[in-house]
Image 1 (spheres, rainbow, N blue to C red):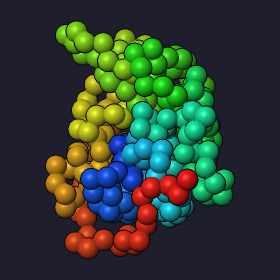
Image 2 (cartoon, rainbow, N blue to C red):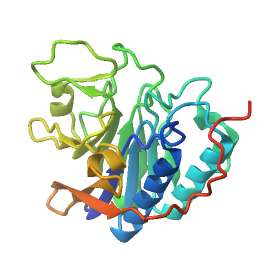
Image 3 (cartoon, helix red, strand yellow):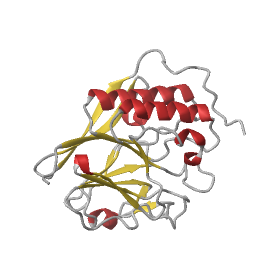
Image 4 (cartoon, rainbow, N blue to C red):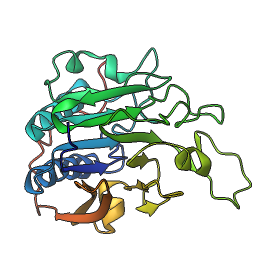
Amino acid sequence: MPLKRIRLVHTSDTHLGDDWDPEAAQRALSRVIDGVLELNADAMMICGDVFDNARISDAVLDFFVAEMARATVPAVILPGNHDLYDHSSLYLRSPFADAPDNLHIIRGTTGETLSLPELTLDIWGRAMDNHTPSFRPLAGIPTERNGHWLVAMAHGHFHFPDDTEERSSPIRPHEIAESACDYIALGHWERFEDVSQAGVTAFYSGSPMGAAGSRREVAVNVVDLDSRGEARVSVRQVRMPMKSSVPESIPLAADN
């Protein structure tokens, strides 16, 4: 089957349920979903730290699940260091038991591939179960492809060649360069950053508001995979509404 021309929206670090400005985080996520619809995306990815902590209420999780359903296209989620996929993960709680069919959570802590044949797209990711130097977000990344577009998701710290400090969840330049990916979607940094290596396209999206640089806008990475086998990445901004549509009554902390 020939590769389809597809468009992906990539974001990360939405930090729903944070203590600083939870309503703004929820409003930003809603605007990301508006952007997915307005930009005619074929799928979306959130690369870690979707939630700020594991103590948030089910009401916040219900809000998130409802927003993912509103996207209608495949929404792929990768757990990060604030929302680890471990024995007490919030992704194991009841709101996700009734998640819509378009919501896909990467749960494999040694790596797994989600195949979306209708888009001629495979998405690989490794769910984070511990945020330490021993956890390598790109360990096991495919070095071969099966005729589909191949996109990877990872949440961690990219080590530039002159970095001397060992950081948790390291991402090394050679791991990107040696992969077979058409695009690697990264999370953990609040800013937009191009860390492509040896012809392999890899970008941080930054958080929606952090990448925009304004609390009146959100920004996402738009990734166009075209028929020539190329990945074109651009930053698109979506203006925030002046008033929130998020109910102020959503509790942040879990009852238990």
